[in-house]
Length: 169
Image 1 (tube, rainbow, N blue to C red):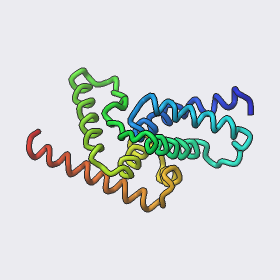
Image 2: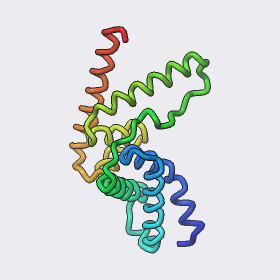
Image 3: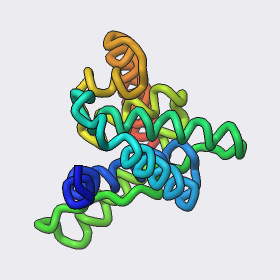
Image 4: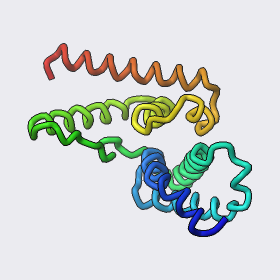
């Protein structure tokens, strides 16, 4: 594999790997280090590239494992999901954009109350848009556990949102 081919394959994944790592390690600089380590490992294994069915899933799993290792080594906490950039639809007026941004920010804050596994599953499914099977491979858990964690996470968020609405907050 040439450098050009390698770069083409991993450039599209870089941002997704960074966001996922940042959720785990809680530090942008450390997340950048993790992504750099993933790229180096993938470069060193470039000749074995054909062995992987899904390069993205493999890179996400590698990112998860390296991020957890870094977290354990440095005793970092998870990043607040409110730091994640969220796309805002351009067709919205400024008031709607602000309301949308506030709602997303509030949901991210509520996600901080979830368990680590529920938060990772919800991040991968609802924010990154990954398939259940890919999430199971990345997190190395059974498919039914992915679905259970996602169901419980969404139920918890929904309950918290309904409680807030009923109190008029």
